[in-house]
Image: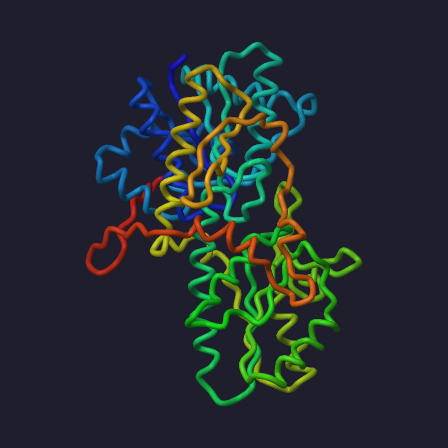
Length: 410
């Protein structure tokens, strides 16, 4: 059933999340949807009655091309946790009342683990009340920690950025004839997919980072300091990549050893920051050398100037595939990418039960981690390299990238 469509964006944005939005919008219009609405700030905005008619904002082919290349979430995002069904059904009744008022037949949510939890709950509630609205999840997260799917749109571009900037940081660290330790903190929470991408810097023209610490393996700070000392005997500039989510053997995050005040969101996720700063301070105290702590932070997810063509293309494809599946009667599913060929690289889209994906965290396989040398194995690099290939140049105006900006989100 076609009817009207509504789409929202949730969680942390990526450099290609808007390409998925375009994929939903364009495919829905091409397949006969009368209206495509956009939730302003996701499900939280919808609860407040905030939505827009996307036909009034995406008017031309140029708008579509600009939006594909625009970072962040065009419609605005949120981190709103729906209650469990039965705890506060009034919330669900309000959502469905709005959907019925707008004659919505297909609901799409672009996001990561928490967003898929939202799709799970809405589809279950819809089934319980006999609703004919289809609910589909569109994968997105730079963390690459969604279950089942080979990878998530957004990850490839973030990995491309990380590999590129780590390479440049390594070059910069060799400028002076003095000992220096640089520690780079990379996003990813409890999964090391992004941090492992630092290994992409290693090649004929770059030695790569000296060590890479992934959160899948607990960190021993004393052993870390010992390894730094051994490296300093061999070279003056040492560069280490660490995950923001590094934990100690007792389960505490390394960043909890700092006095940083941390924010916790509605899903109970603590802001992870300060790992690199803490480790750099420990190195400085022990060895008396110059240290730098570099947090890539949100730069990893908004660097659309270095977006990967493979990534932005797949982001569009999963949006379109979600529409196709919903219009053909599927609901309570997420689109997944399935790698069917490594060389040449090829992925296809499939649908998968949202209950097998929501709230499941996919981590780097331990066999892809070099425990002895604190690095990643060749299998990790073989997995990631196809995802960073090719580029899609920004549309430049007056020397800077031009974006499509929706000004009424506040």
